[in-house]
Image (cartoon, rainbow, N blue to C red; front, top):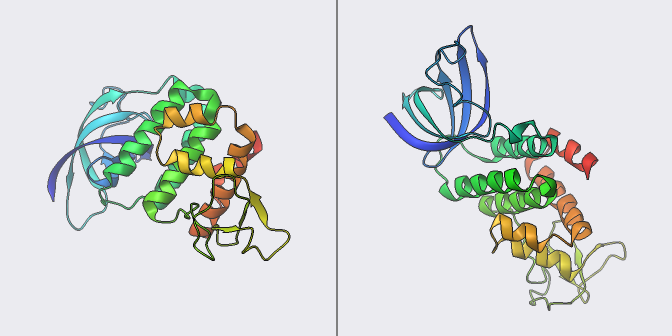
Length: 250
């Protein structure tokens, strides 16, 4: 492939040998990229502070077709969230998002929508650190939607009738909804219209508008969060470690 230039968000970095670092980025044009930043651990490294987690950078790297790890050349820091990263809510929420991205994003598979959505969520989290649950829910909804896993909550999964605004619905084991006429079990999870609106609103609003929309719907947002995390665990076949920390803080 040769030389590649793209914008990216640094998800992780860790040491390699004495002077180098492995850097994992979600990039705008090339999807998930893992690369070696040679000399990054030296005091006078050319990378400077451009390898801090959650930084937005412009980078160039060289890729050989037979190697997964690329060789990172230059990195220009575009935006840093270094100061915000010291805040527990921000760091733990973003660490959870990073775990999800490492599971769902594919190496060298361009997905500009995923990149733009992630970038917008990081920025919203930095400016609204106390609303971590709402922007995490927003991210989970869009991650599932872009991956083709988000259930359709506009129609009954059995009779396919469009659900009325205030109609009572219940959640099936496959995470789809059924109307009251099609409900079979008495102990199904009831989903109110307010909860349905939260799932639908996220698909039309920016992260900031979604935070405003859910401001007075904390309990409904929390319940949607529980459902989404169960769905994600079902898709991946395992729990995400960072999920337990967020649930404990809720």
